[in-house]
Length: 343
Image 1: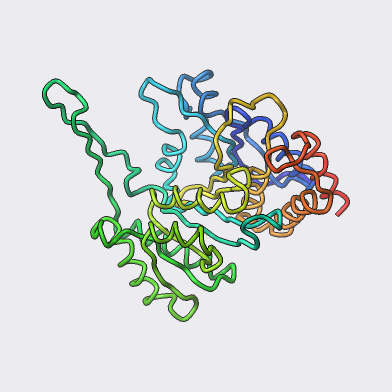
Image 2: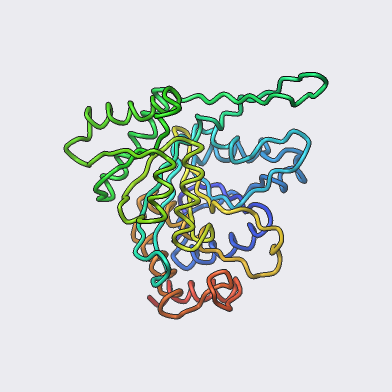
């Protein structure tokens, strides 16, 4: 099948090229529907263009409106801002969706099936920070300002309700700290109940929980939750916590959805300590590719990829070292490809 869907490909830094190669091999076995435009970002962008987010990369995503991205490393020093944050801002990627599902049964937490939705462009991650010098100490006082808007809350909440309903979920839980940050997270909680009453009350249940209590409840009894939605900082923390329930960030894909583009990614870091050793686990990026296939309505291919991953892990018992196995990246990839081709 001739690729027909234009998409931007960013391999990323560290283990990025290795896990991207593995993911592309899996997609190729499926009959890759994407026409890739390869670009660079992160440290690769600095080396080639003097910018961790080069103009050519931004132009490519503006054209394709679709991207698959490996992990990016933010250069230390020099005033560089996170490329991930810049991408969210540039393309108004207001919704970050992180599915968390048990892939290897029998662990401490079994049968986990959570969806975490994170507001992606507002809150305390807007970067409104400054220092106040006192008595010769230039960093005597640090101040950060968080900003949540009614419209920003509606954007992520509406996306959460619609997606949860489409996926057959039963309940959305809003995670907040409105007992203390009454304005900053109170507006998010208030908007959730307004929007639910306005549009979704007869389609899905809604409740809420304070963020610290949510962390405790996730550790004690994660099965009480179905779909979580929260503000930027809390979403960053809770999605990592949820990933820990199913084996870590190596199992965690992410979808960034916005007005101008959709970018799919492995949410883990670039792991420079194991880069080039051929031992990286490519599951997170493969699952991100599955989310990307879902996004373009190729659900059969997405499900075939997920099933191949599950069968490789649980039927063939081929796993990378971080999952207690002995397979290197290539052997694991070959097993996935074989499963896709042979069913």
